[in-house]
Image (cartoon, rainbow, N blue to C red):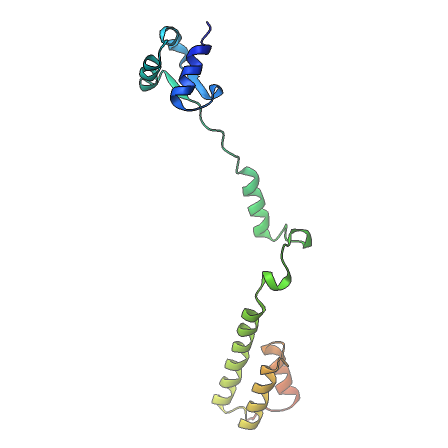
Length: 150
């Protein structure tokens, strides 16, 4: 049974390619008798002729990659795009660090463990980028015996 003409007309009516047209196998006789566009339209309406499902792209590999990235894999130098500064904003890092240092020093001063002179000195040093971290400040304070014991 040759249904190439019906397939072509159906493709035109549905607005898809010939390969995407699907015929109901049980009702091929009805389809063979349809020779006009209106006949084909009625068959489409009765779901004798339909569109094949669109082939979608598989997400299986993408899911596997996402799981690997969560574990910390696939983050080597070959995967990195952009400079170090583009990947993490240095200003945001600085703001985060300096806030931690200043709150720590303020807390020590309010508890009365630091003299005003030492507090000013440490604040200016931290502003100048002398300290790497809160731990570094603690180390500096203990080495220079700045903490007052009550």
